[in-house]
Image (cartoon, rainbow, N blue to C red; front, side, top):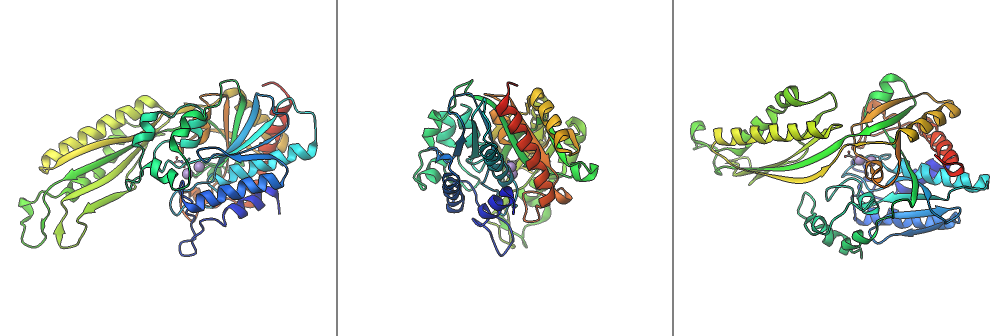
Length: 407
Ligand code: HGY
Ligand code: MN
Ligand code: MN
């Protein structure tokens, strides 16, 4: 079994659900932290320097300690009931690349670090681990960060013996990293459809998360005439129904708007809902378009609320800018794919990734392998072991060239 496959299989022993076949290593859960502790032990057993930093990032290091270093990695936390490869692949392949460097035993111009970032999936909004390393976390954000169920970041981290405010002192100095390279599953249908082995991301979409609350009057579902209701469920349905029109009028081919979570109160069949709260996630590779889509949605929510005599509140929860990745590294990725004998194509990333945080402090690169049926963030997420080895080949080639010469 390859190193990459061995590490993926070992990490996926944590948080696996027999019932659904999915993985639950949500940020700062016991399963997430157990997988991180396993990673530190594995890296130590392989003879690398390794530690978990104060906010849960797992870091391993090989070669000379003088900076700047080449860093590669991704994340091992998952969304609830997530898949086996999202993030885990990039951590496993980065370690495989570092083992390859150690076994080649060549004189390295630059040392290497591998990383599994904390809370990439944004349970608390943002991407805590990579944003902390790239100096993009603020005290006020930490103080108010909470998950969709109202659990505070500070409390979730305290429960694991971690201090969320230590994120303010994790930032790497500019110049301390020469490059960051991430291998990830595509999480979409393009590479499989195009029959291409490797995707090279040139730009990563931004992510805007809004929470919408509509409030009407809870009432009897049998005695309340249809024309005398203040029903937020009907309001929410109308807002969701208008998303298509908003996209047609203001979006691009990279625009995505998703309502993934909705809750009614009191959420019982024989009562007209009093309150409905739902999330809207807006994504695009163009920041201005994201802003226009947000404004258009806010207008449609206000208009719909008035029409149904509802009170409404829109709470911005988090915002990540779209990020253009380093073109020199994309060039190196293209050459590495050619040297490895694998087809590749440039593309945009609809999913957010730690590479978009790391681009703030060093040149960053993100390469993809195909997702079968384009599925991700679900137990059906699947990438073939052959595709995983092709992605690992290219990552190893990139790391070899980056640790041996200037870029
Ligand atoms: O949601 C995303 O875009 C990523 O999987 N964190
Ligand atoms: Mn991911
Ligand atoms: Mn993900």
